[in-house]
Image (cartoon, rainbow, N blue to C red; front, side, top):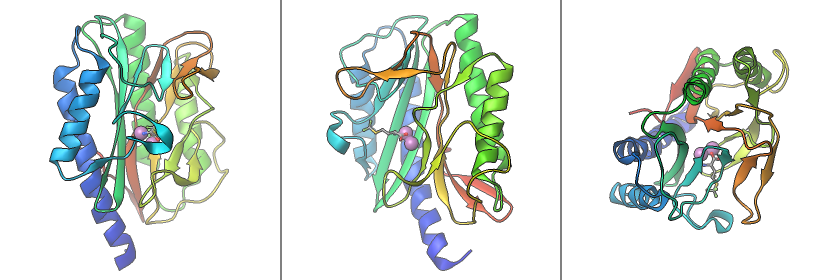
Length: 247
Ligand code: MF3
Ligand code: CO
Ligand code: CO
């Protein structure tokens, strides 16, 4: 890999580890009775204590340091005084900006005991993301990623959100290409070693349609069904990929 790519990978790895570390801290407090503001404060402090900035804070006017998307919220939920209760599922999405580069990752947490259906949705979403990450390498088509996710999810009877996608990332938070979580094998741009992007499928228990609330951010399922999401930032290599947001 050329020197130029090497720097991008090294810097993204460093930012990615901070973002993943914040989620690890969140996992310790994601219990019934805590507020989403508490999760936000923890993310803010962890990211700052690790020499990074939280990229969401003030991004296009977003008011908080992470997104907290519970139950029928698909993505971009705004932390608040809302208290989590037993049975909730909640995605926490963290993006660290360190030394000029971004690392973006999210997980859906189960709050206490959750329903069998919710558990299946969360597992299917995670498995779909990992299955698609495992096929990434130079020469793969972007459509192969979407098709892998869509096939896995629809086999389980769930639906893939189409209104939001993964994205190129690096010195900019969001850049080309758009990484769709549905599609057809063999279609779309071919991956090249050195490309860095996120895969972040949002999967609904019911219909795939979403709408955005009046706050301008919170995206929810139109049919109020549960939604789950996981996200990693990855870098393409000749024979595979590196996941930057693992610890
Ligand atoms: N982290 C989200 C993503 O995966 C973006 C959040 S933008 C915000 O792309 F402004 F809502 F924070
Ligand atoms: Co992202
Ligand atoms: Co994210």
